[in-house]
Length: 294
Image (cartoon, rainbow, N blue to C red):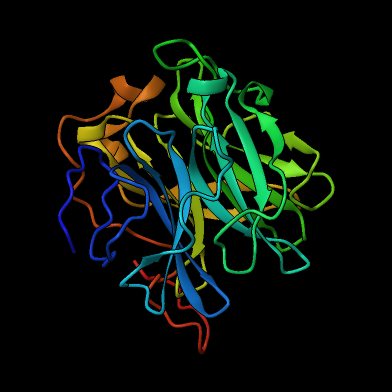
């Protein structure tokens, strides 16, 4: 793999990405890995100097690569400054990219969706604006110019069938923040209703959901929103009929690095206690999950 300069914290580690990068020479941001039609697709934000940032898909037969670009450039709209693309597959098994239209270009940042072809190499329809950052009742102006930020959309369907979208912005006094919205139609076109309270508002966000090998629902995010100090936080989660709740933060990085309104309560030394989970995350799904003792 050819070494490239990357001055940002979003490093793609232990994954082989083959040249050429078609259009990019900077801003290798926020990669996500998705399994689609039996192949592994890495979706990330890239930029070429003198051009807008966009989201492109790369593909491999292995989650460790090598990954090759799909198509000849970003699938996000031409002339749009975009980031944080994620894959959503609707109930008709059709793929969409959900992404952020940058507040730097439109002031009130947007969460958008665009339908993709089966190869994830290009769009097959027009982008749809799902909602704007100022629609969130918990959001506040952030950034140097005071715009409204949208970051990190992630789609998740509850066991009840309700479709949720996690997304990130900034809240008054709370720093970087994760909230979520609910689709009234149960599909990507919405309309989307914002949950009034954020999930996490202590300077940590860009969240994703996953299940451990033991079957427990977890949320990951990075915290605090200071590049040199960012660490992963892992949360045990539970579903309600139409929402999500944090049960426990298990990784302990909040202990000395928490930000936002809680920054004055951080301890001066890192937590050394071992992470403790309700369900052993290493447990295989065969035979059921085992409760962790102790």
